[in-house]
Length: 290
DNA sequence: CGTCCAGGTCTAC
DNA sequence: GGTAGACCTGGACGC
Image (tube, rainbow, N blue to C red; front, side):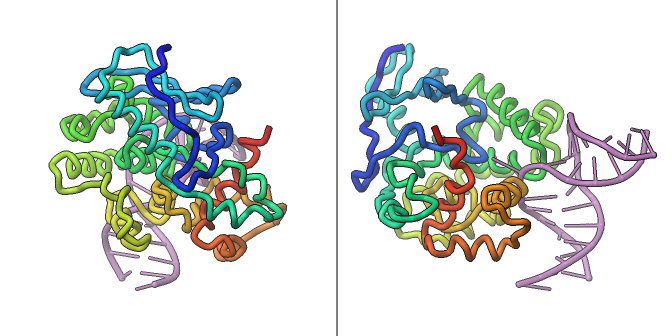
C-alpha cells in the first residue's frame, strides 16, 4: 500500500481525535463497501474516483490518519479522497465544547480524550440510503441489502445516477429490499435529476436543526428514527437515536428494568446539544473500551 | 407449517 | 396530534 496522504487527527477546535475510539453507527462503517479490522485497527473501503474503483485503507500512525492505496492517483483525485476522509471523520467539527462538558462527568469522562467521532459515509446520500436499509428488519437483512448495493457499484457504493438508472425489479429481486426499494429508487432519482441535494445538508451553518430534520423527514422511508440517525452523522448531536437496538441496550447499560423514551431523553438532557452523542457513547462504550 | 418480529415508516382515520 | 394496521423479507420460534 502506498501512502497517498496523511491528515492530523485533530478536530476543528484543535481537539484530539481518537482513531481507536471512533465508533460507527447504524448505517456506515462496518457495512459494505467498508470493513473494520482490529487489531491492528484498520478501516478499509472501496471508492469510485473518476469512474475508477479504488481500494483504500485508513489507519493511524503517530496521531495522524494515513490514507493508503495501491492505485495510482492524480493530485486532484487524492483531493477527493481527502475530502471523503474529512467527511467520514468529520474533521470540520469541533467537539471541544462536548469534551469540556464531559471532562468531569461520572459516566463519560473517558470520552473526553478524543472519542465521539461517529464515522459517516463519504456522502449524505449513502448515509440516508443505508439508514433506510436498517429500518424494520433484522441486522442480517441490512447487511445483505448494503452488500447488494455495493455489488451494483462494483465494490463502491453506487452513485445516485447509477441507482436511478437501475430497473426497479433489481431492488426487489436482487437486493431483496421489499417495500424499501421504492423509497431508495425515488430518492436516487430525485438526487440524480437535481431536484434533491442531500449533500447540501452538510455545510449549512445557517441551517438550524429543525430545518435539517424537516428536510430529512420529508424523504420517503425516513421517519423520526432515521432523521435522528442521519443527523448524528451530520454532526447535529442533540437528538437521541431511539430504536429497538438502543432501547434494550440502554436498559442493559443503565441497569434499569424499564425506561420510557421520555425518561431516557430526560436523563441525557443535561448534555444539551450533545445529548444524542452522549447517548450513543454511553451505549457503545463497550465497543471501544480496551 | 403458521406466527412473530427485527436497529420503523406510511396512511388513514 | 395521536394511534391502529399494513408493509417486504427472512430467521427464529412454537405447534
